[in-house]
Length: 516
Image (cartoon, rainbow, N blue to C red; front, side, top):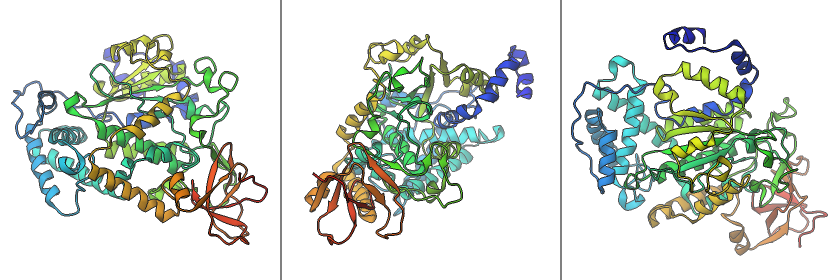
């Protein structure tokens, strides 16, 4: 930090010792959010220096379906014409290679199978080129073949990830219901979503409330289950990235994160103001025995696998709470969704956070630092520079829809469930992928499917969940609130533990439980 201060002395930067002390004291709070948001901004900590001495050439090798898309691509491709031409050719060869690119892929697929226009493919390639160029040493940033090769390697890595993580299953009907709620995806702790807000350019705006996840002294807080949380978060970013359309003027997106989590700035997080259960518990939840905010109480025991919506990457089941989760989110977002965010706004952050951002701005180039905008309490009207007043939530001084504590998640859920996911071919492919993993875990795609399949609907409140029918196995947890369960009716009556068909894989004991 001292070296950074010295380097910036000519710009008359001054950081007080007291600010540094505050940063040190609040470091654990800061690392929860900053790496996650840093990851989704273009080029991360690398600078994309403008090439002012070059002559702007007309766009070549770009197929456009609208004047808007053509104009936007002309802006984005400046100084990248040659590497773009090379990458476009390599990408088409990759498409022709059997098994490399799934035609139904909503980012890299075809117009016929996935509904992805050629100009949207071009914009995706440009994002990879910008990040690839920024990652190279300065002396190689003019080497077009090198830039194209690095971008192609990143694309190949992304394609492997999308197959391993089965990202296309995110686009199956009903996936938002399964991923966002805690009866089907325990510990997902969703705190951000696309509730339909747009900026002045018509670009989508993600809204998040950090206090829903990290306000540890607030009521109703639930521990995160890392694998389930990561899959839910990546669902939001996958649906966001695949929804961007150049023909609508959407090059990137905006993220507004409400950092208020104390009783003064976010009183509705507390029961004394809003006693409703968290929205993610709307359909019930599983209280997991021995799991706390900092992980398992008994560190000597082997952590138990908690069921949720599959698939998970193998290492996700071994990640601990806190910083390791965000490091993994950082890896996925940086590597597989590059250059998606245009701006990230931190609204109503605590004083220690603002001090940290001042230091942070000295560690990165000016262009990257400008993408992170801190808006203190009382200055929320600055968001009107990006959003129209009828789009800005009332909590930030606008006249748009209220966040309503976490009601915006319910609004987003309705959008995810109601929006078209593309072509019929893509939808069927995504649905088949989702059903494949449901079958592998022994659950049905929905409660209604389970009932139609011969299941019996029972009241699950108070029922304990077990991972196996073995009598000596301790319960994983207990279903709470208004949880409903569906069990198969063709099971032997003498069995104490009955196999679940919905909402999770596992077994339950119904002794003493009212199944009316």
